[in-house]
Image (cartoon, rainbow, N blue to C red; front, top):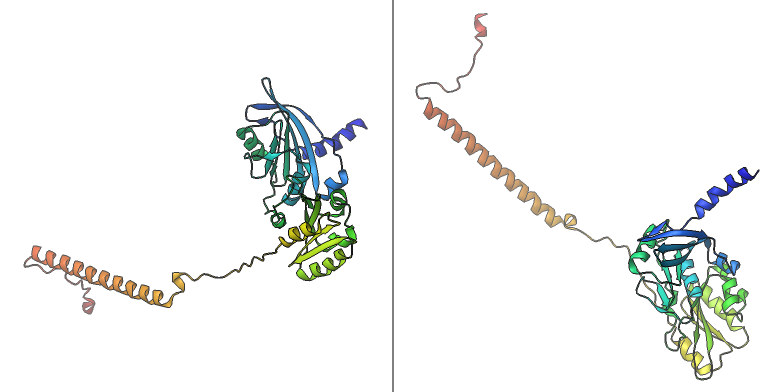
Length: 322
């Protein structure tokens, strides 16, 4: 029975393996499963698997934890949630922050954390290169609509469902947000003279849905709401209504229109087609003239070399005598 249970568990554990055996000169010495707190929120972000490992290179150690999520949006949302409030931007990756003793970075749909000792660029590149099934889809543009003036550093939270809304806001009811309609939201905390305020920007599939949900969100007591295209910005019970109006007024949707338009090439130009036809005719005529002159010249040269002899006389079969 124990052997059968082990046989069933081995494929599961193998499938959950994320981290490689080596990171440059560092070799893995231990592997474990990290404790997952707030499992419901992790599930909402699309957590698929997680793994922790210790790497050693002599006396140097790297403690690494990696989370594999469903897509790059989930990894970005988990990154905003997991980064320390005192973290600063890192140039080791396009989306990374660091503290004196830690590094948090995103690669596609993976979130990777280094604790204790921070890696250098070669070790991080080796880890990113070893990750499997990396999602390369583009990130949502919604975070870019969050105003930067007065924004508390590292206070942003990306919301994909009611669990995150309750966890990071707690004032807006999930029924008013209507995540079942395909909404996502970017939340941030803003500092004002009379106190901090939380602002959430919801992105809905269409402006019509946004208009309907702006009305529902406006029914929340103390809510200040602004709609711009498919975006709905809302803050509830702001300590400074004037500051709230200024922040919400900075949320402006800008539509990006792209068209798949066929670009004509030279082959589609009738004039180019006729010109190329005449060029081909000229080449053929020149070739014919040169070939004719060459053949005639050769025959004339051979005649001069065989005076008094008939050159290449016609062969006859004399069939009349048969």
